[in-house]
Image 1 (cartoon, rainbow, N blue to C red):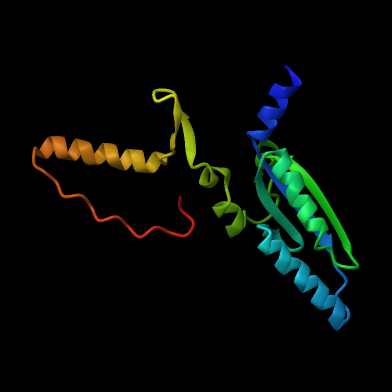
Image 2 (image 1 turned 135 degrees about the horizontal axis):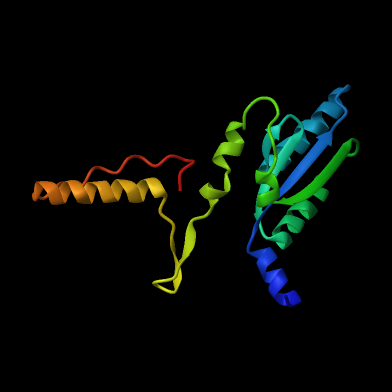
Length: 164
């Protein structure tokens, strides 16, 4: 493949920035630095995967690198911070040996982030409907055909903060 095509493919993929850290917290000043660092990570779009392990989902490698550069600007004076960029495929291959996926991991899954898919019929991007929504629509159509009456549209449910 040509290098330009390879770079385009990398930029089209979701990447995960995995950030791991240990901060000293013996003194009040150290605790303040550690708390400020964690709060700044959250402001930058990171979420806690587990204690001292934070993650951010980025669209493409350049976005992931920009995210790391932003973290470099907020580093505390002491501690140990490591970062790793992994693909969605690598993240999905991770095994949970004990416990379950955290709430943050479940709501930040890739399928919740993809809002548009390429529609080959239209030749353009279209809003992605979840498979459940399309199943509900099909079942409503079949019920309407069977009853041969006009049905009222159901009231839309209140959207959740975590649904797209």
